[in-house]
Length: 284
Image (cartoon, rainbow, N blue to C red):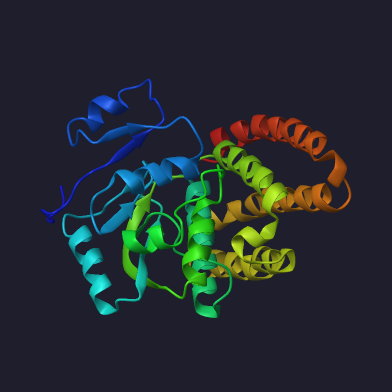
């Protein structure tokens, strides 16, 4: 438990059928249910919370020590124009090679965007002033993916600040290639509707990040830091770029047949998921 007494725990559950609710009820009675989109679930959490500061965390996020929340909340005292305290996120110890590669690359991407002022940071697994979220109209309930980019863009447009908390959270995500592939399908579907503007970048910016910067980080990680997780990067970037290519084709060439394109994406991804399952079993 956290050394921060004035708090409440609000859980939004997707009608779990395992032991999730039994565990959750040990900590809170404030449990709500949502079978809709991720954006809708985020918004329910905002509306059902009574505090001025909201910590919106995924269920696979691990808070590292008992003083973490107290230290994070104090950062809001630095400036009344801060809407978001955004902690660094790392893969837990003993994570798979792919999970560590995903975590390393995501961290580098976010820090580069923060440094250059491009793109968006501070969407989820972060702390927010509730009044700021309410001021911009909350999360987009129609988004199953990218709701974090949406709220980050709205807050940025209002002139609010994001500050970095360098005491990292552990995020237990993208443990297998299969999990990553499934996430890219949902992301590609969203991009077909919204375009890359959702992340406040153009396609050329995303390609630069993944090909130029990503390659630089990979070589640095492999040869200077001796981090073998970067051996997974070629696979990660191929899957990600394939998704970007399908989105570009779907929006420019086959705009009138987007639904058919999505069906084809699913067929391709089903094949890659089978391959990804094999890869995830053999990468260890």
